[in-house]
Length: 135
Image 1 (cartoon, helix red, strand yellow):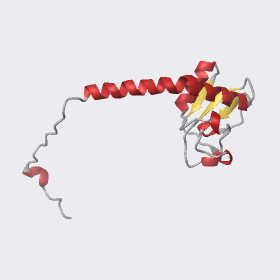
Image 2: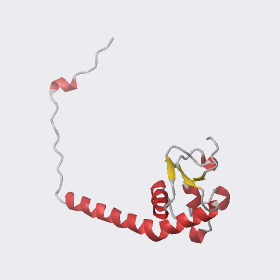
Image 3: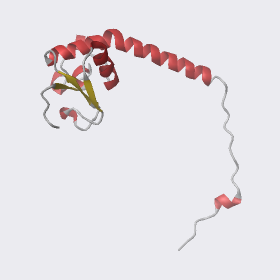
Image 4: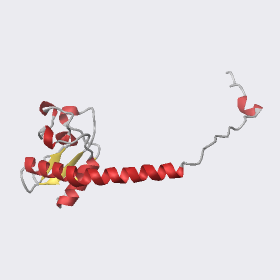
């Protein structure tokens, strides 16, 4: 990728609680998140008021085989301060709101699918069971 001096490259691995520091986590475990996503980081950046750009096909260089994407965030503070602000915002506001939304969607699906579904199988006619021609 081209060098960019106006934005920080922020990867979800920086926030991941399951990774060790040498695997890419930038925050202490107490401030880290479980399974962070680009959506959560994007929502936190919007809430804080940072300009951002998402690159979904990007991957963290230490885990190049696992493309989770990345987000470019404008430089205002130091990179670590920005990461801490994003993590705090995700933990306090974004995660609870997303969990609430997921529960609502689950309940709506349950209500929608409360009727038992019966699969009707269509009997195939003899023409559909023709053997393949040999050459």
